[in-house]
Image 1 (cartoon, protein in one colour):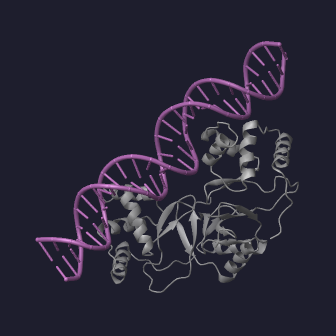
Image 2: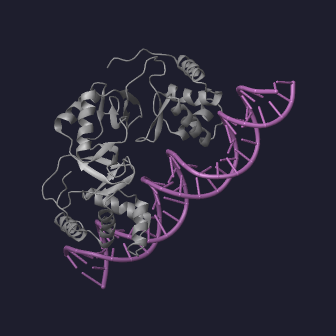
Image 3: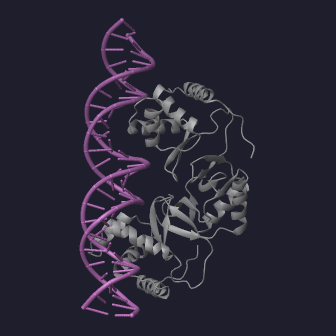
Length: 155
Length: 155
DNA sequence: ATGAGATTGATATAACGTATCTTAATTGGT
DNA sequence: ACCAATTAAGATACGTTATATCAATCTCAT
């Protein structure tokens, strides 16, 4: 139940901006606003929810189609993960880390859309891949997503 | 790679009809047509695809909203599984079995939407549940779905 | 300052799904 | 056999997520 060190939203955004710079890309103002929405909410949000957030909380009109493009960009920069299962997007929880991470797995709370990134033990993933291979299939990605309930929502 | 014994579509539909009778429900003509679509195709299909199937293959108009209701019914009778991940539906592969089955897991081919039901070993599921519990979450269902590629589509 | 490339806006459309109200079919009790 | 109650199905409207396409705008290096 121990948490990672807590960073402020602006620290995370600064880190993301420097990261983009180092990769020769730009974290524009609009991209920063979308990322801020995801970081602040601490949960998974849809493109349309983020457009609403920009309008209501930041007093800034951003059409959903632009949000989609921005999310694509943020995902390509590994600052955001797209969750197929929930059809939503979540800020990567490792923006403030320097080191590389294993393929993450995502636990998505169906109640409140909070998301935990975990790394399933290699042995467990191996067993799973074997079970799948046994019937002639293969996992399309090691980045798994699981419908879950968080502690608060399981009551 | 060994397959279960093969049953004809009509054998499966007869079995389903008797099963409903024994439960005091009715496998009406329309419900049977939808189930036939899923059984014949041997893959996962959306409600709209099934409506198209009824129109094109069975020359029978069935509005998508009715297909949805029928799929709800078939799912409540355990004749059909709804796959959240693919947003499609698949015929249960155990309609012709008499015995109960463990909670199935679904391997869904992203290429062709063929589906394999497997039963992941209890030990593996226990480890997974533990990993999830360790961060204060719990799996919303033991009926997992995995994006996969089948043998034919992996090339 | 200017032109290429990157970024954003605007509009239309597709696919999947739910909500609600109405109509039709079926069943069971008299 | 008939009628009321239940079940099943049709019809319409709307909500949500997402892609495609074309036009406009911004940025940066020359």
